[in-house]
Structure formats: C-alpha cells, structure tokens
Length: 140
Image 1 (cartoon, rainbow, N blue to C red):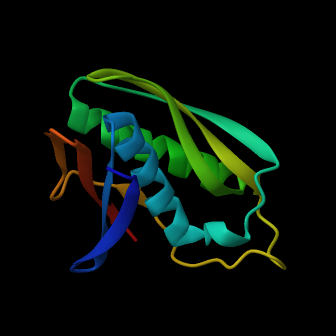
Image 2: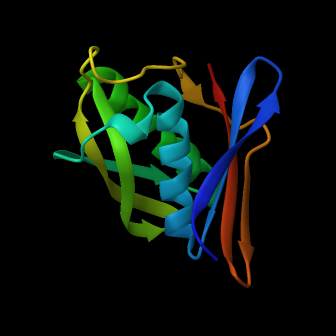
C-alpha cells in the first residue's frame, strides 16, 4: 500500500482520510493533508524542520492531539510544511515527528483555508492487512 490522503465533505468543516503501509505513515499523511489545506505543500521548500510531539490515552485521542500540535506549529511559528515524517509512534501513548518546510512567505506561498483544530467528529482509525487508514474532521 502506498501512502496518501484525500478530502471528504463535511457540513461546515473538512474531512481528511489518510492511509499508508503503517499507522505512522497514515498519521504523517493525515498531518500533511490537514496542513495542505492552509498552505499548498508543492510550493514549500524543505529547508527547515520542526519537531512535533503529542500524547494520548487512545489511538484516536493520539491522532487528534498530533494534528492539533502540527496546527500549533503552523499557526504560532508561521511554518509551511512540504512533508511530514513520523519518527516514533506508540499507540496509545506517544507520537513524535518532524515537519519539513520553511517559514511562510506571503509572496511565494499559496495560502488557503484557516484550519482551527482537529475534532472527534467522524474520527476513525483502522488497521488493515495491507496497512492502516485514519479519518479526521477539522474545524475550519
């Protein structure tokens, strides 16, 4: 299974479905999908990294915390992301990863939707024989 993400319609919000050969890959793709709503990753150079860490008592709680921590880095540091790497995932428990990208340059980066936060609405985590998939809805 290759990794990827797609969007689905949710009234007044946006849903992101992500998948990959491992749960870590699905978490990385979910974060990339959410962050791509704010700044298109194809115009972002991977010249800097930011560490992101989150904790949760369930795999679902961990996913929501992970996405919200990634959004925090984007919003507070003005960081645009070109790719996401999950380096450690102990679910439930801890996820640690790296956002690759650069500080937002309003003249170069195409900005999109303001993403407020990840929600528990329609949240799903699925382990399959060929990999894993996650689904999350973000408040925009």
